[in-house]
Length: 102
Image 1 (cartoon, helix red, strand yellow):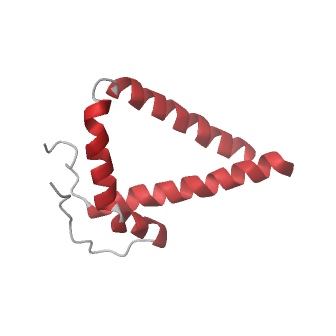
Image 2 (spheres, helix red, strand yellow):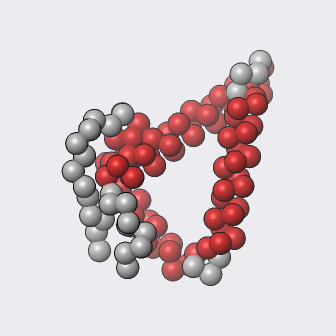
């Protein structure tokens, strides 16, 4: 089953256009792992949410620091920007109820 795409009427940023371009591959990856994750879904959601919250707090607190610590967290921030763009592009290209379809 493929991912139904919506027509995007507004321009997307260059980062989120990457998500538009790879949304089918992202859906296939999720579909392949979904059966394995169903037993741990709630624990995984909590784990990933906690990790993301911690990472974003570290970026906020340390990305403007001097020295190696600041350089490290600025580069982590760049990766998070890419992740956010992929996510935004995916959401812009797919129907909003994609998770509930079987």
